[in-house]
Length: 73
Image 1 (cartoon, rainbow, N blue to C red):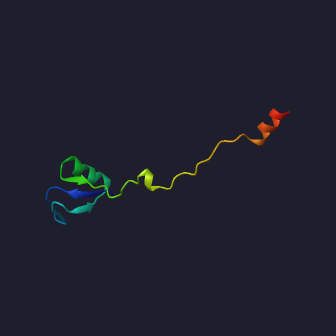
Image 2: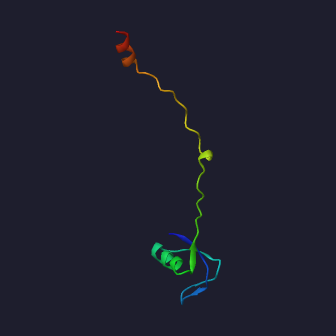
Image 3: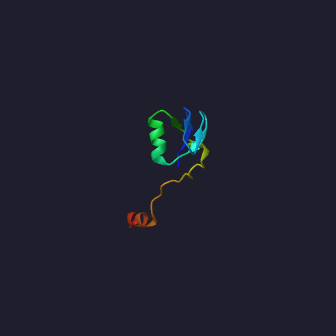
């Protein structure tokens, strides 16, 4: 479920949301509310920077033993 921040007061019989409230909504409702300016999508997951992940081990390309054996024949 996407999380949205309410921008404008929304009141229904079963619930009420005030501006600034964070609410988890089903995707279709979140899309409609964002499209109509009632809410904005909140991205809670931070993207991981490439520097933060472990560096890949460096390797050097070498010829296989089979190709070295063929050249020496």
